[in-house]
Image 1 (cartoon, rainbow, N blue to C red):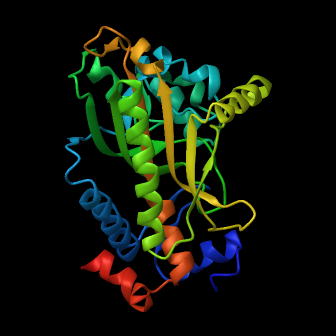
Image 2 (image 1 turned 180 degrees about the vertical axis):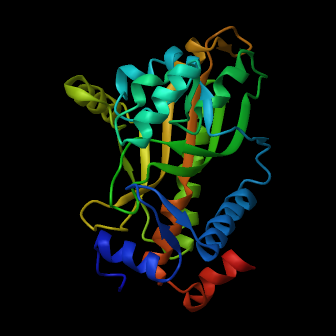
Length: 304
């Protein structure tokens, strides 16, 4: 595969052939080999190095979140097609036998399970907002996380995964604080990616809202320039892949979780996230499947 040839199957087959990813039975899921993980972790380390003096608080959350968060932010109004709700067995012994019989005979058995209090996390930033409730300091707050995200988008296209990792930053404060931080990171993110030999370009974007009403929401989001993405051709030149995204939520989460600035107003929030698997695939796409053959300047940044 050469950098000027774009084909999702060729990319996927190359990643598999070189042991970078390991196929599984479900589309949009795969294992990661040691070399793939090494590149991913080193890129994440570059992001940490770049933001070392920003003063971000470091949080870690599990891949599941309180179902109440999704309900409170009305996630199912806009993205019901992406949700992954966690269900488990709550029955008695007789019902357990019935469940086992269904499973062993290859029959559907989901109706014998009940909804739990958690869902898979559909957005890297969601777990942190309830922790901001109250009044933030005058300088606001900044948190960074590396979170697993789940979205029900089964696909054989390698950059469209059902489960993936995002290096996330969330900024809370006044509109000026939040927007200036977002604009600074948009420039910083593009420079980081281009310094690694990736033809990265920013663009206005929208979220994948559901249904007819979702098209209107997406258009409104674009017109207000509330979402930006940094795009790199990975599986297509005509439709480059978003490897980094920026969302300005205005007071949505401030109102929802009662987060205030010292003047008593609802706080503004913004988030940015690097899709770590996507960045890693972009590096393999543009520099080849063997990191030892990558350009010296790229290797120096990642392995210095």
